[in-house]
Image 1 (spheres, rainbow, N blue to C red):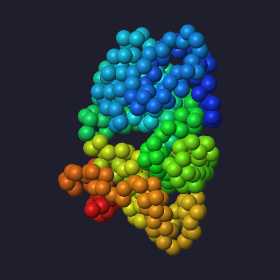
Image 2 (cartoon, rainbow, N blue to C red):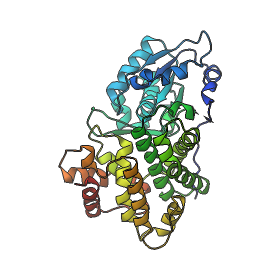
Image 3 (spheres, rainbow, N blue to C red):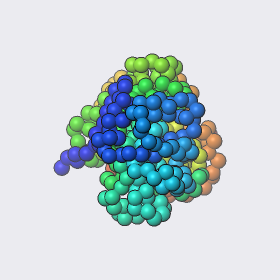
Image 4 (tube, helix red, strand yellow):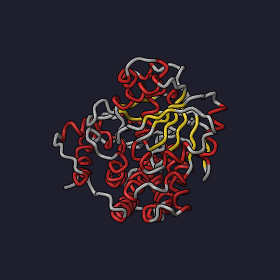
Length: 377
């Protein structure tokens, strides 16, 4: 039976941010807490968002969400939410900010400890704070998904917060908000979108429209990522990368796979998630080679490659070529990963829930070689 995703409402286009004021009024939010990070404030992106608010609109801001989302960040945001008597959350930022908002909308109304909802998502009730997302990167797809990762400790492994009840109520996707995204983050978040589309398409869950969306996302990302990284003001490139990111978020509803299992296994460090997944993708494409070639053929075609024998190897090489052009690393060691407990990394990857949707689940021994390959020199 086909799985039919239920995405939240979305405003997408240049100028979509103009919908923020009317949407706040429509949803009865009289004083939102804006959740963001200091970089977006310093570079003027946050001001672009608040400048569209109607005169007299009350609001508060918490701008100290860390690069990788933490329980501490959510708890400090909660203090602001309560002290400012807010009645809704608007997250402006990348995946860390957007995922933090998912946890905040729960504890803001239901109380309790964040860690409790990470360990027991079934305890998340229906009464949550209104939540609007405004992505400023083009890659995570977190603006529309029903899950996210929160780190209990700053450099510890992330725990998932997964529930239909944390899914944002609305996403406002304005590609103009990504103009100031630096080249390296443009590259890393863009390739993150590619991995979401790839693994969503390969998922054992079937849904033709979402599979078509995933393939379109792959095509858009590989066609425009170089332009977006080299010229941040390239309007066409920014539009297509933002659309690819949104399509990647839609693909996530189908489930992910070993690429993201690896990113979680190496996530016990302050390394960027988008970079972790893109350095993991070539090894997994080689692992799939000869096992699921009919679906790999479609991915290859979306990337401008031929299908047939050796298609997984061709996809892997094309991914490595793109990463190299964009200045992204070739392995996790090159990213600065220093831990050496190979068995712990393998266990984390093998036991990850992301494997459940994989078309072929690596054995523990296969994961051992995969982890060694992804680590690099």
